Amino acid sequence: MRLEQKQAIITGGAGGIGRATAMALAAEGAEVAVVDLDGRAAEAVAAEIRDAGFAAIAIEADVSSESDIERVIATTVAEFGGVNVVFNNAGIIRRTTAVETTADEWDRVFGVNVRSIFLMCKHVVPIMAAAGGGSIVNTGSGWGLKGGGRAISYCASKGAVVNMTRALAIDHGPQGIRVNSVNPGDVNTGMLRDEAQQLGEDTAAFLAEAADRPLRRMGEPREIAAAVVWLASDESSYVTGSALVVDGGGIA
Ligand code: NAI
Image (cartoon, rainbow, N blue to C red):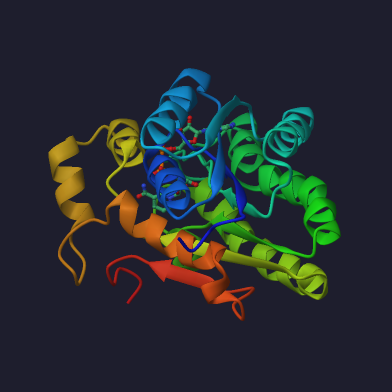
C-alpha cells in the first residue's frame, strides 16, 4: 500500500485513463475524489471503487470553472480531511487545423486542458503547502512534446501543460510540492474513437494505425495509471518538473 494517508482528486475520473487511475490510487490506499463533467459516470466509478472495499466519492464538475474547482477541493477536504495528491487529467481534443478551428473551440480546449490546471493549482497549493507538501500530476501528451497533425489547439494546450508543470515545480518545490506531467501516446480509450469520428475515418483502421509504434500496440489505461501511482507516491520523492513519457516508443 504505497498511498496510505493520501487523499487524491482525479479529474476526468470517469474516462478511460482517469477511471483506471482512480482505481489504482485507491487500491494503493488513497481516498479518492472522482471528478467529472459526467456526474453519473463519476458516481459509477466511485461506486465500483467502494464495492472493491476502498474509499471514494464522486463530484460532478466542469474543471474550467473556478467556482467548480473551489467546490471540488472544499468537498474533498470536508470528506477526507485534506488533499495531498491531484491528478489533473480531464482533457478534450478537436482534430482540426488552425484554419478549421473556431476561436470558441480554441478557448474551450484551453479552458478544459490548461485553465483547469492553473485553477486547481491556484486553490490546492495553499492547502498542500500548509500540510507540508503533496504531489500534482498533470496529463500532457506525446503531442505536447512533438506536435501532431490536425490538432492545433490540442497540441498547443498540451505543450502548455508540459511547460506549466515545470514552472509550477520551480515555484512550489520549496513548499514540498512536486509537480510532474505524464505524457501518454495513443491509449485505448473513448478519446481515440472520438478522434476517428471527428476525422471521418474508419475506427478499426484508425486504431490499427495508433498501434504502429515500437511496442506494436496501443497503451492500456492501467499502464498510464501505474506511472501516475509512482509519481503520486513517495517512491518518486526526488522527481519534480519531469515530463514522463509513457507511449510504447512513439516519440522516438
Ligand atoms: P476520455 O475521453 O476517456 O476521458 C476524458 C474524461 O474527461 C471524460 O470522462 C470526460 O467526461 C472528462 N471531461 C471532459 N471535459 C471535462 C470538463 N470540462 N470537466 C470535467 N471533466 C471533463 O479520454 P482519456 O483518453 O482517458 O483522456 C484522459 C487524458 O489523457 C486527457 O487529458 C487526454 O488529452 C490525455 N491523453 C489521452 C491519450 C489517448 O490516446 N487516449 C493520449 C495522450 C493524452
